[in-house]
Every structure is written in structure tokens, then in C-alpha cells.
Image (cartoon, rainbow, N blue to C red; front, side):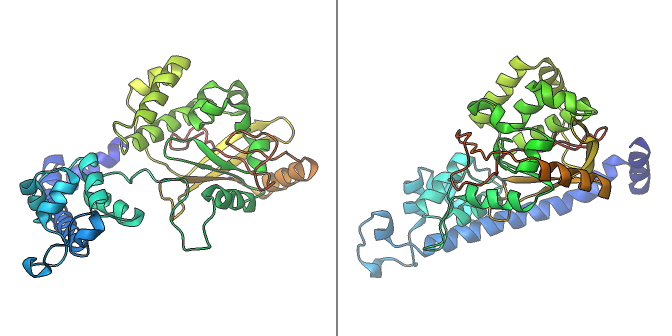
Length: 347
């Protein structure tokens, strides 16, 4: 790592020179994003009529431009007219999440438009309801789709997490190879709780500490997009009280995103198993995380398949019914572990 940093600095004339050379590009990108934000706001304002937002129509001839006036959007969203005008003009001003969300409501943005507005403002995606908008007749619970997805991944262990690393769905291989999230209390079905408080998982992992440290690093990076979110803050507070390791390592402020990794486990029935980790995000829910744990060689795959053929696990619903998922599937929910010795994998 030090050698690579030295080479980069030498080639560019030093870290200060490199940062200075990148500054015009960053300013240009920021300026372009502000201009796009202003254009988006103007386009969405122009498509609205007073009646759409509960205002009297008045005489259309008195409106010099189509759509609502800037003053009307400013009033509806509770912001100053001058500030909103500057925002539409692409000026270099900051906008909080609360203000951007208020503008989204005033402009009657749909979920995709709201997400786009937040992207242009440099903010994390908005919190979305459990059931997104779908064409008429196609609506279904997103968790039903997630359960089918993780079931289809067998014999590989598969699990899906939300932004806070709460378990949303998992399959039978995950419960047999790694952990059964239903053994955790309903309020603590979370990958961090499993990693730092479950003694069985800790004993099964060949190298628990690197994986646990990697998970903290990934969670710290994820939390950077959710500053001020009380759910994230509460999780950190509770884990700090429950786990000495979490408290000490969290104070070090580790940050590292996912790197390809392999985690090793000592399984009580099939012995030592190396699992290669993959992380993917569903396009319709980019804030969710799908983790696949794939046997690293053909021998491991044969042993996992034999384990599955010889065992059956009851289904479970992460919402609390240990007797089975609503559709009778054997899917469950959770995140996997990472490669021992590699600090980029959540365990």
C-alpha cells in the first residue's frame, strides 16, 4: 500500500499537485450537476397546474409561463423564493435532505423522480415503502420476489439485506452453512448483531476477527449515506453496549467498501469449507444488498449439495413466523461472511 502511494505521488509531482490537477474536473462536475438540478426543477414545475396542488386556477392569460410560479413552489415547500430561484439557476448553494424532500412533495414527484432529485442534490436515496409502485395488476410484495431469488441461488447460500444490514430474505443453504436468522430476537435480526453476539457463528468461522472488522468497515461506509438516521444511531449505540470488540473497533473509524473475498468455515457435518463472496444490488432496489456465498471449488460444491440432499429446513418468515414464509417457501433472510484475512467482506 505504501509503495503504491509513493508511485502515484511521484508520477504526479506529489499529492498536492495531483489534488490541484483534479480540482477543475470536480468543479466542472459539481457545476454540471447543479445545472441539471435546476433544469429538472424547472421541467417538473412547468408540468403542474394550480389545481394539481390545491390552488385556484385564476385567469390562464395572466400566467406568462406554463405551470406553477416559483413563488408558489417556494410557498408549498416552505422555502424562501430567492433561495429556490438560486437553486433553479444552478447556483452554488447547499440543500438539506429535508428541503429536497419538501420540494419533491410540492412538485408531486413519483418515487423515481424523488430519487433522481436526491441524486442531483448529492443526497442518499429516499426511504422507500415496502411495496414500490408497479403497473396495475403487477403489484406484489418485494419480499416475495427476494425469496424466489434467493431460493433460485441454491445450492449457493444467498441472503438479502437492507441499508442497515437487517435480514430481509435468505435461503436454506444459508441457514445450514452459516446461520439461521430466526434464532435471533425479532428486533435483532441483523447481520451486525449476528456477527458480534452469536457465539455459534463465531466458533464456526475460521478467522472471525478479520471478517468482523470488515463488516464494521462496510457498515461505517453505508452509514455515511445515512447521517442523522436514528435507526443507524440506535443500532451503533446498542451494539456498543453489547460488544466490547464492536465498541473498540468502531471508535477506530474504519471505512472500507467490499473487495472480492473468500470466507472459511468449519462446518460440523461437512468439515472445512471455503466460500467465495459476491455482492450484488437489485436494480429496482439499489439500497438492498444481495450476498452470494459460493463454494470455492467443485469438491466443496459436492459436499454442500450432499448436505442439502440429506437435510431439509423448515421455512421461516423474517417478520416473525418460524413456521414458514407466507407462500410456504423455505426462504429466510440475512447477509454472509467474508474471506478470512480479507477485511473487505461482511461476515
